[in-house]
Length: 210
Image (cartoon, rainbow, N blue to C red):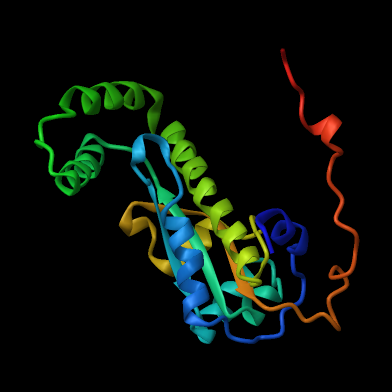
């Protein structure tokens, strides 16, 4: 299938059958998430992959007892930075410049400019901005999963503070922002599997300004 056919095929799976997603498909999905664009290339987020059944059972009540948590093969958790700092920005550009074989001082002015913009906006703004970057990666993973014929259910319905505590994210300077169970649909028992996909028509969704 091409990308549009894959996106037409996918839906928010409500019932999964517990089958395991092959490692090569999981790796493909994670690589798509890793390659996603982010503001200034900072990638202010990390992805946690959870398949441990005991841990998934602990996460389920945190996610309003949604069955996909424990019926999934893997649960992906996007955790964004809880704020920016000059040190984090410098570390990101140090890696970038090293990988490209460029002088480490080459982007000093840009780094200072970036921090001068971010610092006055405060930690709450910074946290939201980092979370927005995580969502770009998240969307790439959803598309990659569809391409691989792996079902996925995007979820914001969970208590981030409790999940952060369970996974020890705050100690890492991270905050969970969105989660994605991966697996395979239980077509016999999923009420959502055969419902028509409904989206806004193109003439209501796209506005061309000439």
